[in-house]
Every structure is written in structure tokens, then in C-alpha cells.
Image (cartoon, rainbow, N blue to C red; front, side, top):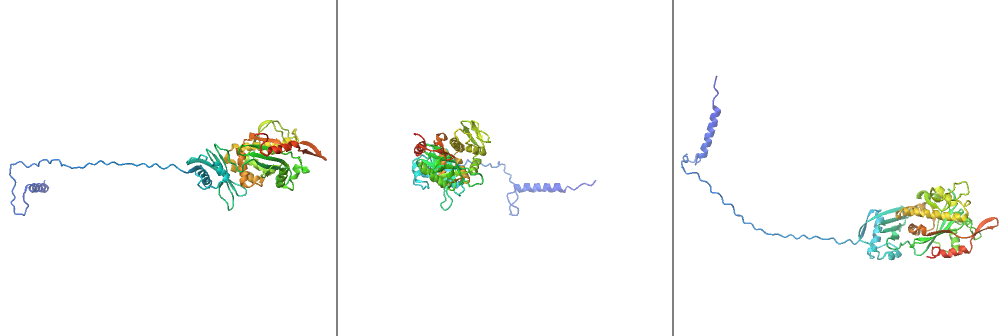
Length: 421
């Protein structure tokens, strides 16, 4: 068998030899130096160990001073929570004026004096607000915090802008508009749904008097058939309207009435539908005197139609018109209790409801401040009564004659309460 040439091993051997020669030579090939090998028996030189390098370092201690800046305490109050922005800004202006009277404010001078010096802590405060638009385009708003509430009005037209008109703050008496007793004529006509609510007979006639800062007052009813100015009182409203009734009751009683509020059947039902079924406690059972159901004694809940019927019944009641007038007062005070249970934030909604269903000659600020006074009043501290009188006849007509007893009530009512404080 033919042998393979040993070419590859020979090349490797040559390469190793060349490598070894290169390591032992002291000259470079081609420089004329002899190719000699070093035959010295001296041990190869060994490099002395290097001394560790000496490093000169300069060490310095640096002291860093950290300065913590404490922010100054807040000087203004800001609201956080569920408050419409523009209303919230108005409420902040109100409270910040209380903190610093030099700050601008749109509040009435009487309110500014009333809250002067009231302790308000700057900082962030939780608040809730509500807004409603009235039928005339004016807006009513309320902002409530843990320390109470402030009521605002924003009129439609060129003078728009939120303005505080009432304040109910913890620790001080409420400020609810004009000072002193306030008197309002409350009218209910017997106009059926679809009829003119302001020019039919007046079946319900009351003076609502209040002392806003004290939370008390009186609700004084006139028997429907009271003989006044040569006519039954109920028959004086047709053709004269509520404005005529305002003049007649003011002249008869001598009481300075701010204005009137009035509803017919349609308005009454609308108000009660917005408010909800009426919770009322009747002191005695009441016979309707007709085909309607009677009313049992005790607490009960009445839908709007049953509430209206309770305001109308008289033939089955022992004192007829006198008892009916007292029942009407009971309904008003029971409705007021329901409104109060919903809290101050409900005030814009129920004023707006009235603006849709009722009639008044009061401007928005007067209506709202009267409503605010009712909102914080104690229903138990509002006397519900009917004027005393005697039943008689004018011709064949049965009427009620108001005598000296009624005159005494008028005189007593000028301070908005019945009896001594």
C-alpha cells in the first residue's frame, strides 16, 4: 500500500523550530550580527518585587447644611367637594371676607356686620352645594360645610352674579334677611285644575308670621266665611286677585304684610307631587262629611290628592270652617317638617318648585330669605290657630263675625308670636 507523504508533520516541525530560534536570537536577521546563542550559566535575572506605590491623598471633611423651609400657614379658605365652581368661588369670597374684612365682598351690609369676627380657620374645607333655577331665570344656591350653610342668589339679567343673602353658621344666630318680625299672606284658591288660580274664591287665608333669628312664629287662619268689608272673605278674591286680598287683609289686621304666596288646586298638587306623600299626625279622627274616605286619628301618610281633600273638608268637622283652617295649618307645618328633614341643600329645589307651581309678588331675595327662615324654624314653635269669631247670618247667608277676640290676636301678632316670649 502506498504510504502518504509526511508533508504536514514536516511543516509543523519546521514552524516549531523557527519559533524556537526566534526566541533565542539576539540580533535581527539581516543586521550583520552573528547568530549566537546565550550560553551563560547565570540564572536568569529576576525582577525585584516592586515596592507598593506610595499614594499621597488629601482627605477633607465636608459639612453640608440642609435647610428645610416651612411654608407659611394659609391665609385664605378654599373649598373642596361637590360644589358648582362659580357658586364655590362666591362662597370662598364670603368666608375670606370674614377672615379679612379688607377683602372684597358682595354680601349685604347687615350680613357683613353680623358675621364680623366670626372664627373662620384658613385652609381647605369640605363642602357640598346645590343650585336650582327658578321660573323667572334667577338661580338659588346653597353651600354647606360642617359649620353651617350660606344661601346665595344669582339674578338673571345684567346684574347676574352670586350674592350671599342668608347665613346659618354654628355658634351665632342665623342671618336671614330683613331684621325683625316678618309677615306673609298665604292664599289657597278653590280654582280647579285648568281654571284661573288667582281669580276664584279663596278657601284658605292665613298670615304666616316669623321671627327668623328665634326660629318661632305663628300661622293664623281666617275662617273662609269671615264677614269683612261687607262680603264673605272667600268672595273678595274673584276680580281682585291676590293683590286685592293683600290690601284687604293688611287693612283689616293692621299688620305690615311683605307680600303674598298663592296656589290653586293645580299648584297645590304640583307642589305636593314634587315634595312627595305627606307625613302628618292628626290629633283626632276626621269625618269627611261627604263620599270621601274619613281620616283616622294618628300618624299617616297621604298622597297629594288625599292631602288636598284634607285641606278642603269642613262639613264633617265639629267646628266647620274653623277646624278646616286649623287643618290647613297642620298641612303647611307638616310639609315644612318634611322639607327640613331633607336638609338645607334642598332649599333651592323647593323654592324652584314653588316658582313653577305658585304665585308671589315677592322678589327672589325676599322669597328665598323667607324660605330660609322657615327652613331653620322649629315647627313646634310656630303656633297654629284660627281667629276666634261667632257664626251668624247676613240675610240667608251663614257668615263668621270676627270681633274683639280677633282684634286682640292682630295686636298680639305684630311681633310675630302669640303670647309673651
